[in-house]
Image (cartoon, rainbow, N blue to C red):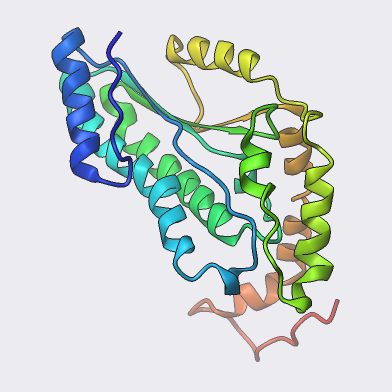
Length: 236
Protein backbone atom coordinates (compact mmCIF):
# COMPACT_ATOMS: atom_id res chain seq x y z
CA UNK A 1 0.00 0.00 0.00
CA UNK A 2 1.22 3.51 -0.88
CA UNK A 3 0.13 6.55 1.12
CA UNK A 4 0.11 9.87 -0.70
CA UNK A 5 -1.18 13.00 1.02
CA UNK A 6 -1.90 15.72 -1.53
CA UNK A 7 -3.47 19.08 -0.87
CA UNK A 8 -6.76 18.29 -2.57
CA UNK A 9 -7.35 21.93 -3.45
CA UNK A 10 -4.20 21.95 -5.63
CA UNK A 11 -4.79 20.36 -9.02
CA UNK A 12 -1.10 19.57 -9.58
CA UNK A 13 -0.93 17.55 -6.37
CA UNK A 14 -4.02 15.59 -7.36
CA UNK A 15 -2.42 14.72 -10.68
CA UNK A 16 0.75 13.63 -8.86
CA UNK A 17 -1.28 11.37 -6.56
CA UNK A 18 -2.97 9.66 -9.51
CA UNK A 19 0.34 9.23 -11.30
CA UNK A 20 1.87 7.71 -8.14
CA UNK A 21 -0.97 5.18 -7.97
CA UNK A 22 -0.54 4.18 -11.62
CA UNK A 23 3.23 3.92 -11.25
CA UNK A 24 2.84 1.70 -8.19
CA UNK A 25 0.04 -0.59 -9.35
CA UNK A 26 0.30 -0.31 -13.12
CA UNK A 27 -3.37 0.68 -13.53
CA UNK A 28 -6.19 2.71 -12.01
CA UNK A 29 -9.53 1.00 -11.47
CA UNK A 30 -11.30 3.12 -8.86
CA UNK A 31 -11.10 6.74 -7.74
CA UNK A 32 -12.98 7.73 -4.59
CA UNK A 33 -13.34 11.43 -3.84
CA UNK A 34 -14.01 11.68 -0.12
CA UNK A 35 -12.38 14.96 0.96
CA UNK A 36 -14.72 17.42 2.59
CA UNK A 37 -15.75 19.20 5.74
CA UNK A 38 -18.50 21.44 7.06
CA UNK A 39 -18.41 24.87 8.64
CA UNK A 40 -21.70 25.91 10.19
CA UNK A 41 -22.35 29.64 10.41
CA UNK A 42 -24.40 32.30 8.60
CA UNK A 43 -23.43 33.03 5.00
CA UNK A 44 -22.76 36.62 6.06
CA UNK A 45 -20.12 35.40 8.48
CA UNK A 46 -18.06 33.17 6.14
CA UNK A 47 -16.47 35.63 3.67
CA UNK A 48 -13.10 33.88 3.29
CA UNK A 49 -14.03 30.39 4.50
CA UNK A 50 -16.76 30.04 1.88
CA UNK A 51 -14.28 29.83 -1.00
CA UNK A 52 -11.98 27.45 0.88
CA UNK A 53 -14.82 25.06 1.59
CA UNK A 54 -16.00 25.10 -2.03
CA UNK A 55 -12.44 24.44 -3.21
CA UNK A 56 -12.18 21.41 -0.94
CA UNK A 57 -15.64 19.87 -1.33
CA UNK A 58 -16.24 20.61 -5.02
CA UNK A 59 -12.99 21.38 -6.81
CA UNK A 60 -11.24 18.45 -5.14
CA UNK A 61 -13.79 16.24 -6.88
CA UNK A 62 -13.24 18.06 -10.18
CA UNK A 63 -9.44 17.98 -9.95
CA UNK A 64 -9.08 14.31 -9.03
CA UNK A 65 -11.68 13.29 -11.60
CA UNK A 66 -9.86 15.26 -14.31
CA UNK A 67 -6.61 13.49 -13.40
CA UNK A 68 -8.12 9.99 -13.31
CA UNK A 69 -10.49 10.13 -16.27
CA UNK A 70 -7.96 10.02 -19.17
CA UNK A 71 -6.35 6.90 -17.69
CA UNK A 72 -9.69 5.14 -17.32
CA UNK A 73 -10.87 6.26 -20.74
CA UNK A 74 -7.77 4.76 -22.34
CA UNK A 75 -8.55 1.40 -20.69
CA UNK A 76 -12.28 1.73 -21.40
CA UNK A 77 -13.11 0.90 -17.77
CA UNK A 78 -13.09 2.35 -14.30
CA UNK A 79 -15.21 3.73 -11.49
CA UNK A 80 -15.23 7.28 -10.14
CA UNK A 81 -17.13 7.45 -6.86
CA UNK A 82 -17.94 10.78 -5.24
CA UNK A 83 -18.82 10.75 -1.54
CA UNK A 84 -21.52 13.41 -1.46
CA UNK A 85 -24.37 14.02 1.00
CA UNK A 86 -28.11 13.94 1.41
CA UNK A 87 -27.60 17.71 1.42
CA UNK A 88 -27.93 17.59 -2.36
CA UNK A 89 -31.63 16.88 -1.83
CA UNK A 90 -32.38 19.66 0.65
CA UNK A 91 -30.72 22.66 2.29
CA UNK A 92 -29.83 23.28 5.92
CA UNK A 93 -29.59 26.69 7.56
CA UNK A 94 -26.02 27.64 8.32
CA UNK A 95 -24.51 25.39 5.66
CA UNK A 96 -24.78 27.49 2.50
CA UNK A 97 -21.20 26.79 1.41
CA UNK A 98 -21.38 23.05 2.09
CA UNK A 99 -24.77 22.65 0.40
CA UNK A 100 -23.63 24.70 -2.61
CA UNK A 101 -20.58 22.45 -2.99
CA UNK A 102 -22.59 19.23 -2.75
CA UNK A 103 -25.23 20.42 -5.20
CA UNK A 104 -22.32 21.18 -7.50
CA UNK A 105 -21.00 17.65 -7.05
CA UNK A 106 -24.46 16.25 -7.84
CA UNK A 107 -24.78 18.18 -11.10
CA UNK A 108 -21.21 17.47 -12.11
CA UNK A 109 -21.72 13.75 -11.52
CA UNK A 110 -25.05 13.66 -13.34
CA UNK A 111 -23.60 15.22 -16.50
CA UNK A 112 -20.25 13.40 -16.42
CA UNK A 113 -21.88 9.99 -16.00
CA UNK A 114 -23.64 10.50 -19.32
CA UNK A 115 -20.43 11.61 -21.03
CA UNK A 116 -18.36 8.62 -19.92
CA UNK A 117 -20.91 5.80 -20.12
CA UNK A 118 -20.24 4.99 -23.81
CA UNK A 119 -16.61 4.07 -23.10
CA UNK A 120 -17.20 2.10 -19.91
CA UNK A 121 -16.31 4.54 -17.13
CA UNK A 122 -18.91 4.69 -14.36
CA UNK A 123 -19.41 7.89 -12.32
CA UNK A 124 -21.59 7.75 -9.21
CA UNK A 125 -22.28 10.03 -6.25
CA UNK A 126 -23.09 8.37 -2.93
CA UNK A 127 -25.43 10.51 -0.86
CA UNK A 128 -25.41 9.42 2.80
CA UNK A 129 -27.35 10.78 5.72
CA UNK A 130 -25.69 11.38 9.08
CA UNK A 131 -22.81 8.96 9.68
CA UNK A 132 -21.46 8.01 13.10
CA UNK A 133 -18.08 9.63 12.54
CA UNK A 134 -16.63 12.90 13.87
CA UNK A 135 -18.13 14.97 11.03
CA UNK A 136 -20.76 16.68 13.20
CA UNK A 137 -18.25 17.54 15.91
CA UNK A 138 -15.97 19.17 13.35
CA UNK A 139 -18.74 20.97 11.46
CA UNK A 140 -20.76 22.07 14.50
CA UNK A 141 -18.39 21.68 17.44
CA UNK A 142 -17.11 25.24 17.79
CA UNK A 143 -20.33 27.21 17.97
CA UNK A 144 -19.75 30.55 16.26
CA UNK A 145 -20.90 33.82 17.77
CA UNK A 146 -24.00 34.44 15.68
CA UNK A 147 -25.53 37.73 14.68
CA UNK A 148 -28.73 38.03 16.67
CA UNK A 149 -30.90 37.76 13.56
CA UNK A 150 -29.65 34.20 12.93
CA UNK A 151 -30.26 32.73 16.38
CA UNK A 152 -33.81 31.72 15.46
CA UNK A 153 -32.73 29.68 12.45
CA UNK A 154 -29.06 28.71 12.59
CA UNK A 155 -28.81 28.78 16.38
CA UNK A 156 -31.69 26.31 16.78
CA UNK A 157 -30.35 24.15 13.94
CA UNK A 158 -26.96 23.87 15.66
CA UNK A 159 -28.65 22.77 18.89
CA UNK A 160 -30.72 20.13 17.09
CA UNK A 161 -27.74 18.69 15.24
CA UNK A 162 -25.52 18.69 18.35
CA UNK A 163 -28.03 16.39 20.01
CA UNK A 164 -27.42 13.77 17.30
CA UNK A 165 -23.75 13.23 18.15
CA UNK A 166 -23.22 9.54 18.86
CA UNK A 167 -26.74 8.72 17.67
CA UNK A 168 -26.34 9.11 13.90
CA UNK A 169 -28.07 6.32 12.00
CA UNK A 170 -25.33 5.78 9.43
CA UNK A 171 -22.75 3.03 10.05
CA UNK A 172 -19.44 3.94 8.33
CA UNK A 173 -18.30 0.30 8.23
CA UNK A 174 -21.43 -0.76 6.37
CA UNK A 175 -21.01 2.19 4.05
CA UNK A 176 -17.49 0.95 3.31
CA UNK A 177 -18.96 -2.45 2.41
CA UNK A 178 -21.33 -0.75 -0.03
CA UNK A 179 -18.47 1.23 -1.59
CA UNK A 180 -16.46 -1.94 -2.19
CA UNK A 181 -19.45 -3.68 -3.77
CA UNK A 182 -20.26 -0.67 -5.95
CA UNK A 183 -16.66 -0.63 -7.19
CA UNK A 184 -17.25 -4.13 -8.58
CA UNK A 185 -20.63 -3.36 -10.18
CA UNK A 186 -21.11 -2.48 -13.85
CA UNK A 187 -24.65 -1.07 -13.88
CA UNK A 188 -24.89 2.00 -11.62
CA UNK A 189 -27.10 5.09 -11.42
CA UNK A 190 -25.42 8.50 -11.03
CA UNK A 191 -26.89 8.93 -7.53
CA UNK A 192 -27.27 6.41 -4.68
CA UNK A 193 -28.83 7.30 -1.33
CA UNK A 194 -27.32 5.70 1.78
CA UNK A 195 -29.21 5.51 5.05
CA UNK A 196 -32.78 5.96 6.16
CA UNK A 197 -32.20 9.65 6.89
CA UNK A 198 -31.12 10.25 3.30
CA UNK A 199 -34.15 8.38 1.97
CA UNK A 200 -36.47 10.45 4.16
CA UNK A 201 -34.77 13.62 2.92
CA UNK A 202 -35.98 12.76 -0.57
CA UNK A 203 -39.52 12.37 0.74
CA UNK A 204 -39.32 15.86 2.21
CA UNK A 205 -38.58 17.38 -1.20
CA UNK A 206 -41.79 16.12 -2.82
CA UNK A 207 -43.34 19.54 -2.16
CA UNK A 208 -41.13 20.95 -4.93
CA UNK A 209 -43.22 19.23 -7.58
CA UNK A 210 -46.39 20.66 -6.02
CA UNK A 211 -44.80 24.12 -6.20
CA UNK A 212 -43.81 23.52 -9.81
CA UNK A 213 -47.41 22.57 -10.64
CA UNK A 214 -48.67 25.70 -8.89
CA UNK A 215 -46.39 27.87 -11.02
CA UNK A 216 -46.90 25.91 -14.26
CA UNK A 217 -48.94 28.62 -15.97
CA UNK A 218 -46.18 31.17 -15.33
CA UNK A 219 -43.55 28.70 -16.57
CA UNK A 220 -45.49 28.00 -19.76
CA UNK A 221 -46.05 31.73 -20.40
CA UNK A 222 -42.34 32.23 -21.09
CA UNK A 223 -42.53 30.04 -24.25
CA UNK A 224 -42.40 31.83 -27.61
CA UNK A 225 -45.69 30.27 -28.73
CA UNK A 226 -47.58 30.94 -25.49
CA UNK A 227 -51.01 32.56 -25.96
CA UNK A 228 -52.71 35.22 -23.87
CA UNK A 229 -51.50 37.66 -21.25
CA UNK A 230 -49.13 36.86 -18.43
CA UNK A 231 -51.02 34.93 -15.73
CA UNK A 232 -51.30 36.18 -12.17
CA UNK A 233 -48.55 34.95 -9.87
CA UNK A 234 -49.66 32.31 -7.37
CA UNK A 235 -50.36 33.71 -3.92
CA UNK A 236 -50.14 30.46 -1.93
